[in-house]
Length: 148
Image 1 (cartoon, rainbow, N blue to C red):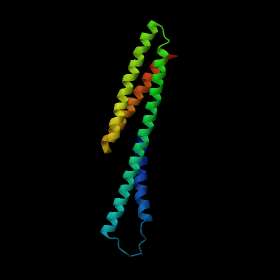
Image 2: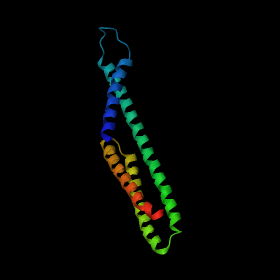
Image 3: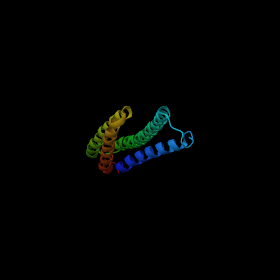
Image 4: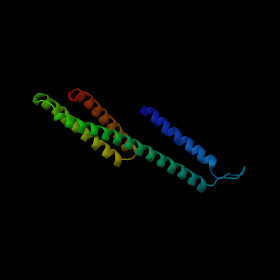
């Protein structure tokens, strides 16, 4: 899926450049394009591509924040359920809950780093955030049996 989004992004970039060229001022056959005109069109295309990339990054970050909020709600629910457990079960469940909180905080930190990154650093941090989110999901899956 990650490879597909990379190719999709660059496909959109190429089509943006093509469409920008097609939609720009119409030239008469034989009329020459100046270096300034070309430079302006390339800058506009580059600006559009950067804007698109930022929008996609923000969309991704919002999706990750929503998932974190969902997990935070589950942690609160698990904390409330912990009160009803017996002593032995409570100790075991508390360990699982502490592990969940630890993984959740690490994931929040990754997402925070992701928000302030750009370019190649953003791509690397995105991978780290996805890995952290996967770890959080696994931790919840493991803890679920303690809180049924």
